[in-house]
Image 1 (cartoon, rainbow, N blue to C red):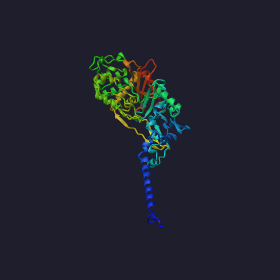
Image 2: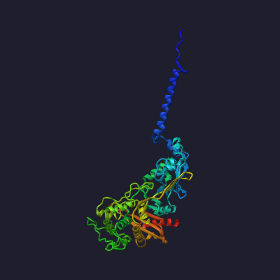
Image 3: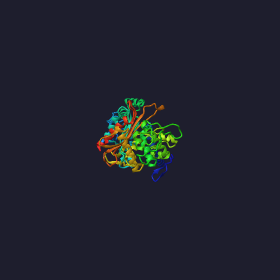
Image 4: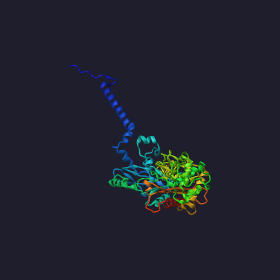
Length: 499
């Protein structure tokens, strides 16, 4: 009987064996290609897929880094015992909500919790000793810390001063741009919805339904007509461009001042302004609409726009690093509209942050610094990741012009509508504002005050500049001098007492 043919063997390996080996090698190569495609080229796509809970579980598998005021954490983390190991806590409740924003397992992150999320969550590559290996291994670093520029005493004074009123405070260190206080009322407790339980959802829904909008950051994200506080910008523009040179001489405004192209006079709030021969200094002390409206129109649209923009108006990317809403000064207006805009009405609108920049720029001898809310970023061991440095925003005016505007603001506090901001042993400059709004000006006016303060006799740049707006109050005297100036005073005192 004939034997079946034997498989061909070459160098000791059968043809069948070689085919099987080749097939296994091809499979391994295909697996490698697929793994590379999934883990490298499609990693971000899978990480971002709403069905992928791994990233979310990892995010809350360790305590989040802290946000600090001075050396004190104003945030924390607590074990949940649930699907997500840790959730955010805010020991001071609503005190710093306008600074931190919130970090919620359900609703995400906002403000510093959002802009600095990479540091706080530990995902920023700067927290790793070797970023490449960290990316490959997908190892999670401990969350880092965010040190703010906030002054604790100033923040407490701002929130206490606002109380139950609807409003906001922004305070700045003029020489550096460091934000010393950022307050918004009514406020909210970010801890109340930091988790993912039904109680957290109920707390969130209640806040969303609240008509007082406690989660709105009025210091950064809300604009208001600034009223007569904008006259500081107008005075600076008029002096810088030679519309008027001597603050104590006749500013040249007619009485009544009929706005160009109209038959409408620009009305004053006090009859003391209804005369000719008024100087710029007297016009600021009395807050004369007719004089400042006239000077704004005489200075002209382009030069008024330029000065407003020197202080942060019309900047859509004013990041601190949280982005502020765009403050507005129209770039296309007729002369009568320029006159109205020059007294903080018409379409002029500003955040408290930008109005604090106005006061700070005057106090800093004409140099406006970029506002900053973060002092430094650090690893969990305290080593510095990034140290923020002061940065010039704009040179708004010369030191000589700034000195003239400082004198105007000082006289407003000493002799005019800003008397409630006087501080013993300190030189205070300020400007009140009461801005009408609503249909036919039927709404409760916005009460404003912007100011700066320094120890009497000091030649140094004032250590604090403040903007306050009270947007809704039950008080009978709804004016900047009555409502906002005392709040600004308390914030300035808090800084002066600690400096």
